[in-house]
Image (cartoon, rainbow, N blue to C red; front, side, top):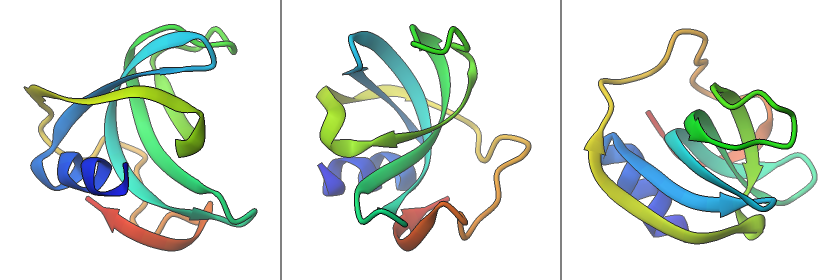
Length: 97
């Protein structure tokens, strides 16, 4: 999945997947390793569902809990307001905008 996520980030392409029982469509911004040692993705969710009820919002998602990951043809223009390169939630970054 790392290659797929990094490819979507570099191409500024939306990702679609299921996470915690909800379909999600996100703009991926960064992918790396969390402080707990898990592969994670920082993204801005643009549609779908969410346990928190906040559908359109910033998310830090565990890659191992994603299923059905696919890169969409739709693109996004670039970093969303509030995005900080060098994500502090990650100890190692594989790729980022």
